[in-house]
Length: 155
Image 1 (cartoon, rainbow, N blue to C red):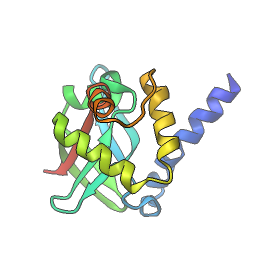
Image 2: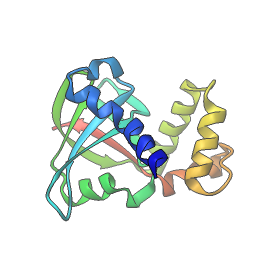
Image 3: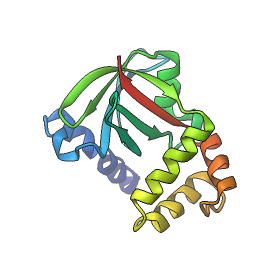
Image 4: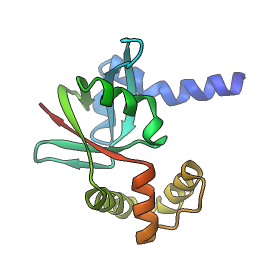
């Protein structure tokens, strides 16, 4: 139990960087998603890795690593009024679910930009998916169907 609690604190650590005004240290690699609970109405904060940052817009693409049942994913569908902090910029955003072809392209681009980490990324994705992800075209389509990609853009 103690190990799980320590691990939880470790994964929540980036939230404190944003709270302390140090989100700029994370640059455009991560974003802080501020959303409202669909049942409780309470404010929640979730740090997500930016898979692709598109300067035009700007638009940040993230993956729901725990699939369509991730709390933040369900919350933004039920209550779409969300905010995002990227670096030191804080703004209200609208979100959209990426269609399959666009999601596959974003995934491939992410793996290409992180090619030295690709074996580790594929290993982590395999664990999240429950099957061996090898990076084939059919694997990519199967992955984005299971772990949706979402784009956030300022309103």
